[in-house]
Image 1 (cartoon, rainbow, N blue to C red):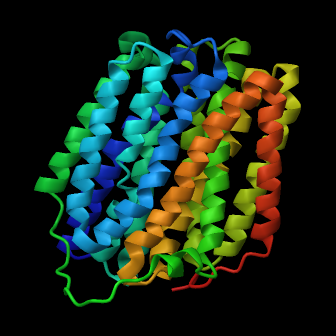
Image 2 (cartoon, one colour; image 1 turned 120 degrees about the vertical axis):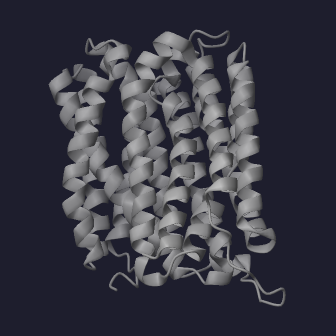
Length: 389
């Protein structure tokens, strides 16, 4: 990497890290902490509050991606982080679950993932882009691991409102990084033709990746509807959930190192299929174990394999999107991808909470297992070009 490419990678990975830490901090504790608010006796409403972030983010991903193609990436990123910070403040001041819904919805409207990823692609050459995208993936995974460790004790000390205030400060930190550390984006010619949104939606290979990321994040959010309660039922207080999460995450990183090497060598189809199949096995295992009140040792192994499957799939897809999409529509393509990702987060939270209310753990885990099974059928025949350098 050149000096500018290294600077771009580090600063944009830092922006992702700050923003995603703010998002991840509330996930492991949201279902338990929100139950203390007025309206917290309704798991469907709490699930909506958890997932509404994904819905508004999905609505804004494509418009902001298109805007970044036209008016510039950095302007869109700063504006989105301002909105995200305002939403965090609303959630911090919330006095009921309904206000949490409003705050989370405003948070999601600051949808800058597509613009950040597109800017990284703009500032790196093809031969180092996968490495740059991997650095972003590592930063996200690192923040996820950190949140699992610090969220339960932080929630005990500063409560859910304090976590949202911290999220607002992290968003402000992201704005500073954009303005002070991120290199300027490449100059654009006014007469340069722009890709059409319909070309992105109808791309013969991008839609498969878009569908996959929807299912993956539906399952992820549904897991956070179910797993915290399973751990409490197994006798692990919420302040100590990190003791199970952290070893599983760290061990999955070790295994991921070898598996991601296979992706770099051109075995992407095999890696994706293996990750989807492993995710299905995790869902089926939880479906079978949930009525039996699984012990902590068993839950530890289940979570380990879940993190392996999730990280394996999550790490391989954004760089493919940036390579498959035309440069003049890269923001739009990543916007569509992140739209489906966000819809998955909303679906997992809202539908997971509704299913938990009306059908219990079995309904949540059974429904997501069906989704993963359908994805596996499609993924088994999936043909993804440009897997080799």
